[in-house]
Length: 203
Image (cartoon, rainbow, N blue to C red; front, top):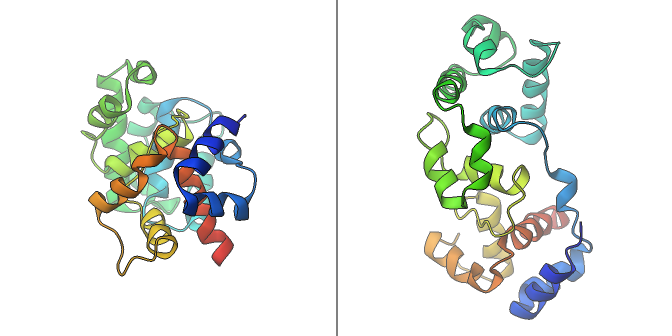
């Protein structure tokens, strides 16, 4: 993946971000990106919500082991008992979210056609599912649909990195996040990745 045009733009647009890019080095965003169908990506996103990466990965792995042949289809998931899903470590609310997703995907067979739509339309379409908010769809846009200009304004990591890098007295609100990120367009996904990496480097 060639990020050279994006990096050139970001370095010129924001001297603080330019320093972060110099410290972090090459962009390896593509290594964290996913393939596979959108239903699989969305079930993964739900399972990963509000958990550490390690805990979420363990639950996701146990979830997939319930379906040894392949990733479950919406019908497979709807036919799986709540008790069996609980045995994989999935919380009751997330079971509700997963089954609501499966039901809505059955009612919306054009799920894969979403890839042809603009970011905001995809967000509006998927946030009707219980447990899928704007942040979850933005992660899908960034890591599965490979959209280049996504800035997840509610992400705690992004806000924490901005507070530290831009010497803010408190965590920035949405308006401030958008203001700081405005010069990064149309490469806010790449900029966001560097902000996350800046937290890793700090720790």
